[in-house]
Length: 98
Image (cartoon, rainbow, N blue to C red; front, top):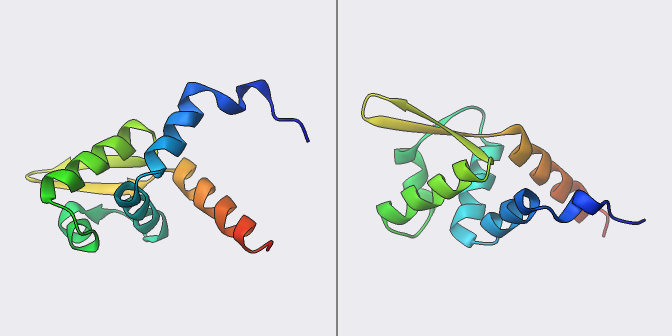
């Protein structure tokens, strides 16, 4: 099957580039599998990087359209977008084809 011309647009490449990093991938996966928002304080212990690296990774995920961010006072909450959910669902279905 031939790929559409827009299959390699900048936005698509950006999404996969962002997910190419282990920390960003793990955070996006956790958020996609979570039922609702997660506080950054819940996400930091799940990855073995500095707090600033977690914040940077989450910002990259937000910029790529994979995660939403909501600020409530001093706290920030993150949630997977429909795009992230769909990508992980497709990846999981594809892994089952082997």
